[in-house]
Image 1 (tube, rainbow, N blue to C red):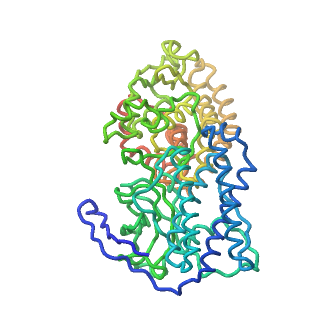
Image 2 (tube, one colour):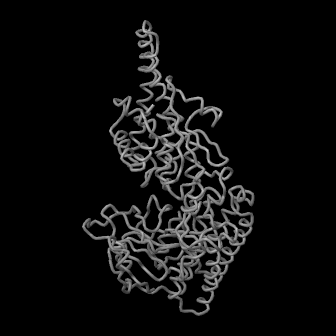
Image 3 (spheres, one colour):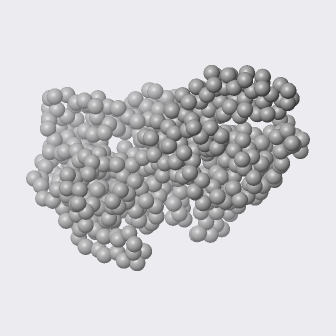
Length: 569
């Protein structure tokens, strides 16, 4: 297998790329029988996957998930194809045929099923291409070619017709060697019959990335893998794409810069060799990255690459998806090559208005919009002397409270709902949690107002009531409310803040982990700001440091300038 290897220095990526042949480690050549059994191993995985999925979901389940009405029937056809491939290879191998194993597949709904199916088909394509050079029997080679061409049609159809993404990754398929394919495939295998023939393959150490589903060209990606025992060894990230391998130095923290020329399905390997990729120098991987792009070559994020709460009943689908997928033909034909999803999103937000009450939760909405760089208008409302919202807000929403936004025909209150709405409609792939942080993001997004904020309000009210009571009653009221606070509110607050402190200790800079704020951070900041300001003795060092870190973000500072007075109440 021949690649062209390019060493890409981080600082001069745009101007200097040197190309040279990729060195590969020599190894004993597998027999035709071993290659066919290797192919059968992969076909067993696909057959089990589709058989399980088609029995688990119905056509109605697919439509309820927002998938095209024709998708289910086509997936049933793919399932039949994979069963046929298994039968064909089993017949060709006879008594030497490997038997199916037990498997576990990472999907929990029709959309994630579709995403996994595309990954399996793509790896299958690369496996057949990479193994073809080992096949000596021309009849076997012809049979493999007929299977490969069908598998390639599967992957192209899944990603374009169903996921509305790119049908191919470039002019050439990416060949993977046997060990690279087995490393990816073995993640689905839980147990195999002891009588199965031994294959001449091994799995490399795992390579993962918490933000892999949000990976994009021109950005850095933090990698997780086991470092070599020699900590001084220089490591590189090798991006395999088509016939090329782009090799980029890894940062000391294990981050790698994704070359901005990459598009489509790419395989990343950590290696100690700056000149190429070989089994001997592979440290970890491969990791499959799906760098989706639109019909103009611009990077984009597919909906089921970065799952989020769907708000389809509220949002125009031409905004959720890349705009030129569902636009009238004339608009597609006339769209400039430089058009991006972000350009269209920003064109569509001229009607977005934040009805902002000073010293309120709506500050988090301004911060979110600044982080996402979404144009918006602010209408500022001042609290009354009683610290209540003015009656003017009743003209915007029947409850007369803030935050509330208007966006065209949509009027939406409740900061949690607003945060979800804005991320879904205008996020363009940002503010989404990594796979490992989805549950934490879901929990803390709702915990902020559901559990923590009521305690913060009680703490504030119990301190405010004595100050507002008649002078001659203040000593009595202060005593009563002081006891209520010390016996009811403060212990509960302490327990909750201990939970938050422990979580931030393990999650890092953001509540869902990852490298950017998500809905959990936008929701949690307001109550934690209030507590750091008004109950500092209850707050741990991690919480204080996290609040300071959020306050240092440029987008937060811009939001503070635009929103006016903000006293954390």
